[in-house]
Amino acid sequence: MSAMTRREMLGSAALVGGWLAFGPHGALGQESKPSEGEAAGGPYRLPRLPYDYADLEPFIDAQTVKLHHDVHHAANVRGANAAVAELEQIRRTGGEAVKQVRAATDALSFNLAGHMLHDLYWKSMKKSGGGDPPASSQIAQLLTRDFGSLEAFRANLGAAAVQVQGSGWAVLVYEPAAQRLLVLQAEKHQNAGVWGVVPLLALDVWEHAYYLKYQSKRPDYVKAFFELINWASVEERLQAALKLA
Ligand code: MN3
Image (cartoon, rainbow, N blue to C red; front, side, top):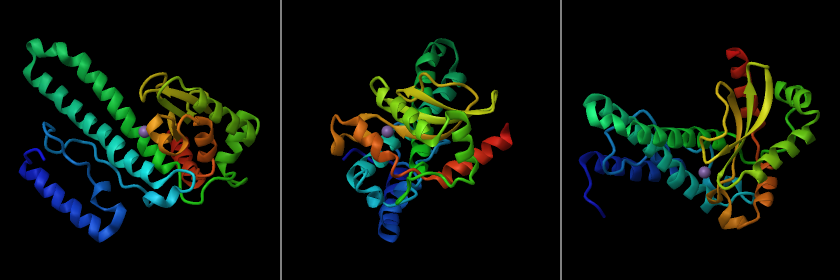
């Protein structure tokens, strides 16, 4: 194991304590593990999973959820904190260092978009989710208005997810200029997005999200995702988006 700083040692102790006390929701979910070279603190933290690793089975296996949250999502959090620290350092130093702004800004865009989409992905699902949103909910009404039917919405989101080239996402958003819902694709985390929209539901189609269980069968994983959607959580975000608009 590499040399640990005092802060890392304290962090690990809290981690063990949290794990024992609270199980898989423990301290791992409260704070990302610091990595070498990372500035103390930083504005971003790995959020707790809102359920246990195994709660999404049989649709998404526990090992995938654990690796996805604890390793992949955590790496985006660390990367976003490191990029913010580097940009602050560049601003302090000035001069030749300014040439590094592009690389640091690229790293910030990739990692922060990844952090935000993963946060939304976890909230988009729940144990025993899926089905249709309640007919009386505003999300059901807007999905029907803007896509024609709930079935047409599912077909649109599913096609967007299956057709992402390489690694990326399908995202349901509220677009405030035309005051309507849209399905967008993101390549990697940060490309092909639209400014000003409010993301409501996110479907990760990076291979790390499904490969252990589904291998190359991305369409089967996408189909399984629909069995997990947390519509109450989507409705909450829609209500918040409508207040902003
Ligand atoms: Mn992912």
